[in-house]
Structure formats: C-alpha cells, structure tokens
Amino acid sequence: MITEEHVYGAISTVIDPEVGFDIVSLGLIYGVKVDAENNVHVTMTLSTKGCPLHELIQQWTRESVLKLEGVNSCEIELVWEPAWNISMASEEVKKELCG
Image 1 (cartoon, one colour):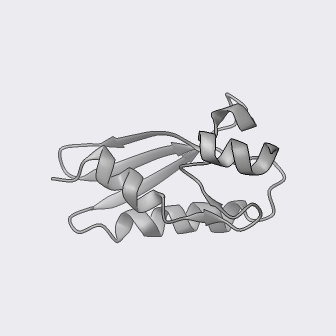
Image 2: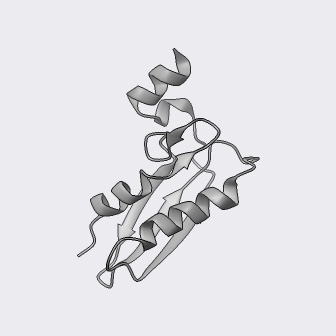
C-alpha cells in the first residue's frame, strides 16, 4: 500500500534548481491523495506563475511518484490559490533564504 508519507518522500527528491531546495521543504506541495488503487493525486503550486521551469518541475514530480513501486498513476494539479509565499517554507529554508 502506498501512503501519503511514501509520496512526500519521493517528491522531496525534486529540487527547484532556482533556489536549490526540494519542493516539499519549499512548501510547494499543497496536498497528496492516494486512492485504493494506488492512483496518486498531487496538488501543488510554484513559487511564481512565470516560473520558467514549471513544466519540468511538474514532470520531475510526476516521475518521482511513478518510481514508487505499486503506483498506478500520478496526476499533478497545478493551482495558484493560495499563492505561495516564503512563510509556507520549512524553517530551514526560511533561515537560508531570508537570513
């Protein structure tokens, strides 16, 4: 059985190359759902709407989830509300980025 924790662990390997932190620590993952058939739905955002790597980051996220043994499918839902801000990031990321 695939759990949300498994999915978050897989997604945490995806690094935003612009800032050098993983997208989970950055607070870009708003939710993960796994159904009974191990289909995964990830709700996420990006730091800006104009992010030049938005397609790649979504692809990397999908690929990281699909690498988990037993996952049947992975759907990425990109949302813009609530808008991302630095307060959503982990304490470690905030300390590094904000001093």
